[in-house]
Amino acid sequence: LVKFSRKLGEGDFTAKAPLVNPGELAILASAMDNMRQDLLHKNREKEAMLAQIAHEIRNPLGGMELLSGLVKEDLQQHGADAGYIDKILAEIGGLKSLINAYLNYSRPTLPNPEPLNIAEVLSEVQETLRHKFSQKNAQFEPSVNGAVLNFDRQHLRQILFNLLNNSLQSLPDGGTIRVESRQSRIEICDDGPGIDVAHLPKIFDPFFTTRESGTGLGLAICQKLCRENDALLTVENLENGGCKFSIIQEFNQ
Image (tube, rainbow, N blue to C red; front, side, top):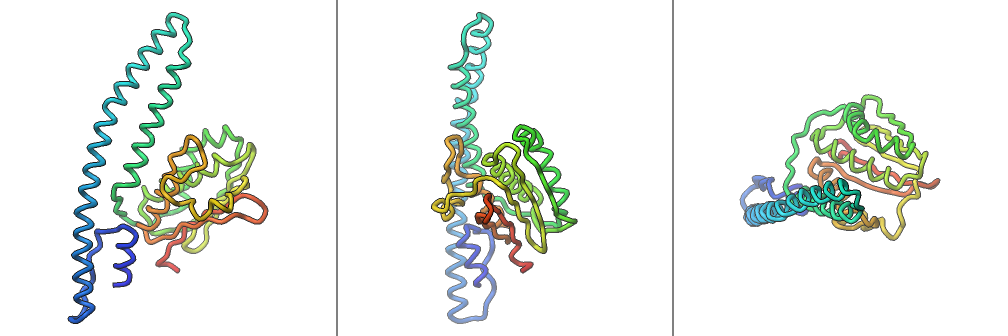
């Protein structure tokens, strides 16, 4: 019943209340399960509404993007400056990214956990980010030694991608990102400037960001996906500079 309560508190309305012996606990479990079903229904209504809103916004954005691209081509053919069109296209791209990020955070993402070789998943993510590492002249130092986590594959990929990308954005040119693993844990460390102490309590809050171009949902999504896989996501500044994000599988502790 305690685990069920925690799941409700984390926004997971799919887990059913456990069977308990008749009495006050049974009444409590029944009331909580009724609440769960009501919340699940309302959550699905919200998701349907968000999907419809996203559809209604995406369509005109797609048209604006297409027409802006045509105007840009026309200007370039006549030797005119298309700088303002580039700004319009950048703003459209930002809006589309924000819509996608908000939907990714809002929709349920039920895990399909399996034993995952961390080195294999990490290699896939690093390959996706290879160009960004090259642009920053950043060093990547993995040391995971065949470690395994019981995780949804796509969820772990998204978490690692977001965390590595987040570190790259704050990393100075020539900086280093290290990924280490030990039992039931992945640690991602960088030698960037670290995180302002005043920002640490809010770092996983939805829409909290210190970057002008950020949506403030990347780390919130990481935390949500970790919770759905019975894991914790923590962050701390390192003594010699930089910060460390840790993915900790709870049930293996």
